[in-house]
Length: 397
Image (cartoon, rainbow, N blue to C red; front, side):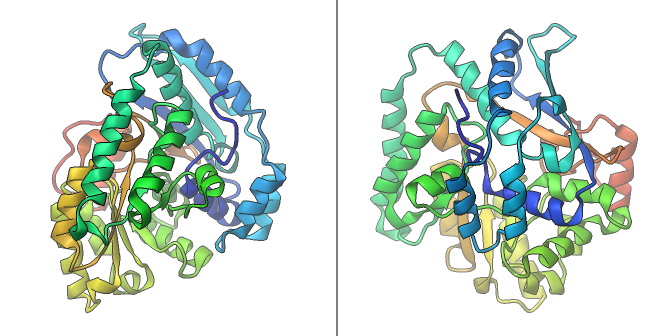
């Protein structure tokens, strides 16, 4: 089977899930799937995807997996106790061909946030692997290894890049589980200290790596429905996070409402309270310059803060960003698809996004309009008004 452990997911699913348990245990949510590649036939693979998801829902956390989670300084004992009882349930997920009969599929996850939050990453990994198993019967791993060696050499062979730190963020769009493991081992052997860790908790535990991650868009989106008022939802999310982790896991996500709205809310208090911020949409060079200038305006030394880039990165792009910002701020990179799904085939651009929380629409309005995913135009217009987003989004997807 494709997923063999509930640890085979990104760390931020657990860090967010702990916040949900302690602060929003009664929240109900809805997620929906989207494939952004045109003309991809996923409908013919629905039965196998369902079968793999059914298997996923039989898994439980093993004692050694719970012990590993307990060893992480920010994971609390009552959360581990809860996970000891946890199991995903098929009643919360439906997978069907699109009624448009266009090859697309509809995946809807609906139910208590606490019991649905762990679906996203393994389901995306399942869709990827099922698709590539069917379409690439004899994968060109030789080509994949050649490309991977070239990427590693770009870092390892350049003494000027000695301080660079790159993490694997590739679980959700990997070519396959076994290829993912081979990639991580090759990175460990070839990059040494330049490999900062992985977002994948299973491989972090298995290979003695640092697990990395804090919050994702769904967390701040849900706060639109859970906070005291919409305008304060971003600050409410940051404050609740700080209350839970008390200085740990201090990288804030910056693009749920775009950079202008983020900087308005990320005031002197948050500049000092959080370790830094993560970029996931828009022009990374412009974003980095704005964030550094924002720290300076708030009398915070940028060299004491960390910026994390994670948006569709390639190794040459990583090197460009590192050379631009290396002497001005602490910097780290999360590279996903370009590491774990680069064998010469077009990777699937698939996502599962939260679209409702407690019965109301939620959305993000990032600096990359094609990343938005909300079909309620009235709510999007209201969100733009509340967060003073002047330029209307070109489209929603």
